[in-house]
Length: 324
Image 1 (cartoon, rainbow, N blue to C red):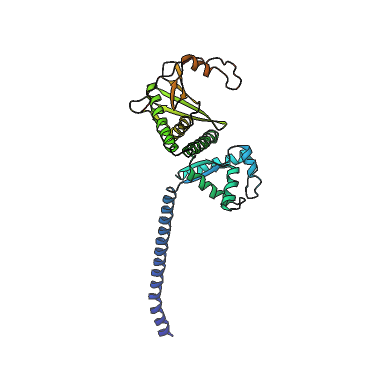
Image 2: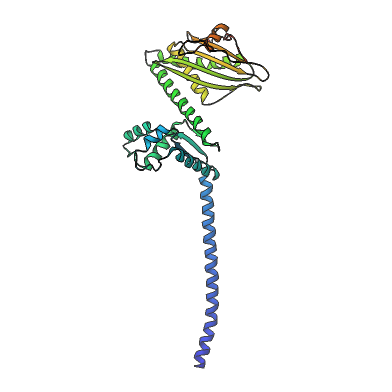
């Protein structure tokens, strides 16, 4: 028994050493595993910051109400919905995710689902539609702005996108009205770019606010553009507003529509000035001072006179050289 016991004791001591070594090795392996997992998680988080996100927002009560007919839509109060969406945007921004916001249109969504044969009453279909919105443009980058500032900007961008699409369709239609109409539409677009540059250059230094309106097909196309010419060098034009403005102006030229262009210039320390031009024969004809005053101080719907703005000077449009 002593031998057995002694023999067992001799075998036990090395076995104990092996057991401690095994536990140490297991702890080491577990540490390496945790480290690998931590590294993988960090890598995924880094990659996540490089994957952009798009959030589609129901900006007004009517559109929100239209979506409530879907059982999979989990909200019943528009105010609470907007607060939740703002929280989501902030959470994405806190993670470093580049996020853009698009306007969710229930009517366009329903048409999208019909065209793609998707069930509109699923989150997956709404996600597919949101991805299509991101690809089509007309989004606003989220930069931490509060929801009450984000919504008006989003609506403005959506309206601008719709104006551009409609104006582009009108130009395309004009391009197919005859064998040489394509050249006319293309030339009108180039001429619109030349006219825009000529107006801003003629206005000189300052911050310029331009509005172009073109009656077409029973409606009125309106484009707005801001140009900053306070510093030396070419004026800074807001994109994509410049493209929309140029396209609307080109429609007026191509369709020979009696549209107009108004320019408001702001220079520090001087009164604001307003000038105007009429679209005529594919170019811009400067309005007289009286015509500018009448256009600005007359109600477009009733024809009744409107008091002139305080601190604003109404001036004649500047003659612009027409390109060959």
